[in-house]
Image 1 (cartoon, rainbow, N blue to C red):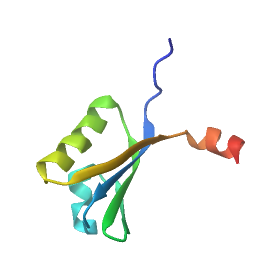
Image 2: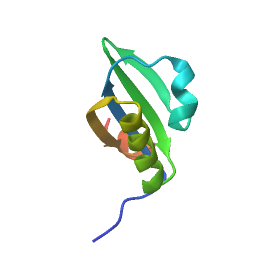
Image 3: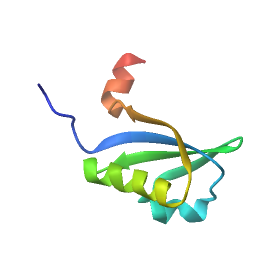
Amino acid sequence: MSGARWPARYEVLVDGVLDDRWSEWFDGLRIEHQGGQTLLSGVLADQPALHGILDTVRDLGLSIIAVRRLPPPEEAEAQG
């Protein structure tokens, strides 16, 4: 069994709208609005960093819609 490689790119989609000032609360992840939802995306250093983001979402009372690990940029280019 091989382990996941870190750092890794993630997207976390939450219900509700957060403005850019929340970026620091989410380790500098990019914040994008999609209607009444917010997409947090970027590179996370390791599994504890991912759990920290999810803990912050929970602490703010936001509902998680989806969490997605994205392929590394070199793999994404090879698939495209």
